[in-house]
Image (cartoon, rainbow, N blue to C red; front, side, top):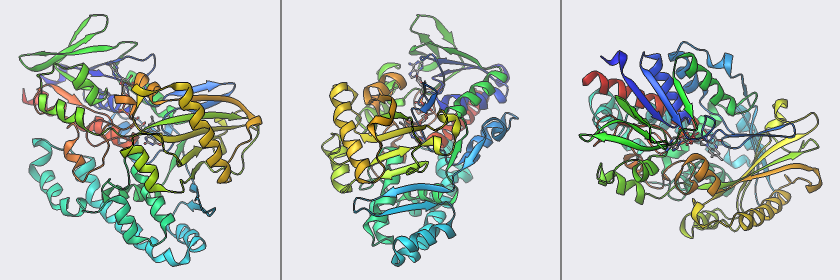
Length: 500
Ligand SMILES: Cc1cc2nc3c(=O)[nH]c(=O)nc-3n(C[C@H](O)[C@H](O)[C@H](O)COP(=O)(O)OP(=O)(O)OC[C@H]3O[C@@H](n4cnc5c(N)ncnc54)[C@H](O)[C@@H]3O)c2cc1C
């Protein structure tokens, strides 16, 4: 009887927590084994000298995804994670010295675009309309349903998905579609940046990625007061209230198969935990390489191992002893040459010579992030997934210099003498902390039109009882998507248990 089934979850990232919450809310016994000392995976945090730095995500979109998860368990997300909707989405600084503060809301945006380049106002409106249509077509069938296996491809949901395929499978790249709307290369660069939200390049990522523009520009950018990690903490508390057993410091070394069916896990301590189903939230590629027998599904294993990984990053957090009023909450100093930047990252597989630099100054809107009169900055540049080839000190000093130079030129610089806290996270740190492949942040890159077909489905095609949720699985990386991933996997597990 499904009611009494035990599900083991490997990893307590947002995908694993979402799956566990959904399953526990429907009456299942759930046990999570997390190798780190704390839950939340990439939502790590550093507290230092009165500053609070998120070390992972900095931009929250689609809060309704979290509201739906909490509501499924009878809880109120907004009561537990108070959100602020940002009135300025981002301060963009371009290499030619021009600047655009993009406000929330289409009307305000068209005014800002008018001041930026009046010739592009109509294009901005047409683009906003087009991305809304694609989002409406793609979000339900491609983000909220299983994909790549029978449950997702058949029935009414499958039919709906097939009807939307021509719209979603545009032959253009993200950069190509941006160029169709905008003659101004700066707006093309602004739209192309959305490919990096999933660790991909705008020159190969499909045009569909433009839906992120709808998500951010029309549906809004949010900040949880107290920091992004608060989401993981609220989910931990909710999971506990639902009776989920959460064991931290517990490294899963093997998913145990019996008669080719997943029946439990082995911990590094050698303890064996039996289960009716196993939900893997650890990176899917790493799981096929390290946790599952090579012959369990050689085709999927080979496909994922060969897949191009999404980007990694260098993160630098800075505590400043002075306010930084020249910064908005989100700030981007663009590279002078996008093509060269992405060729460095994806063709030469090296740090970009002239990188785009992103700065989140969360303390501009959330005083809990820094002591009075101080500023907490999260600075990030994309790097190839490359944890294995890293000389940490050389990487940091090289990148630090470039970051400061780019920010200075963009008018977003900081005075070195104001820095009272400085700390770094490198690709090797991401790889060992999160267990991701070479420190990639979002699972496999989405650098092809058919990327959705190559992701790990939430239900293993070959191994009954084995399920996946998280950035390496359908529907992909980013906090809202991995949360949907966990919920889709939970649905698949319920279906599986009911059919046994
Ligand atoms: C620097 C950075 C910036 C980002 N920016 C944004 C952003 O602005 N907005 C956004 O929405 N998203 C952003 N993301 C992406 C987002 O953080 C991730 O997509 C999401 O949090 C990943 O969740 P996940 O479920 O895949 O689990 P993960 O966070 O990858 O967690 C997996 C968990 O599994 C555990 N684990 C792995 N192997 C084992 C094992 N063998 N045994 C036990 N436990 C194991 C790990 O320790 C980890 O806790 C960013 C990520 C990073 C790193």
